[in-house]
Image (cartoon, rainbow, N blue to C red; front, side, top):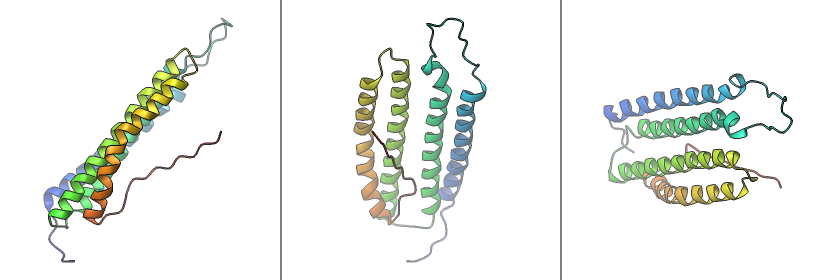
Length: 169
């Protein structure tokens, strides 16, 4: 592969997005920390009153959503930074598909956090809201995955952002 001079616009935009992503992740962690330092201890003066999970855990879920956005922006910046020396239509098209796919998956995860908050505020056990949220997240994220996979092949890249979930029932 021929080494070209780095494209300064891609280097600059990649660096800017990496910095913004890091700052957003730090802000999200700080917002999530408000869950533990900003809430007061529950008052048990009225035995019939329970905890309000939606209100008490809202900063944690919102902080998690901001961390997701920060991770996505950071990853897009890394792809731009790494692609500054690459040339060609295949590479540019691949990076465009990767960025679009990652943004779509990031949006799907943020949408899922909204369903989680809604489930905590629901008077029932929230199972139906969570199932709808997971199905909605899947419907939104699937096109992003289908965009990013061929983009990775076109740009000859490897995934920089991965997630893994385990559940025990």
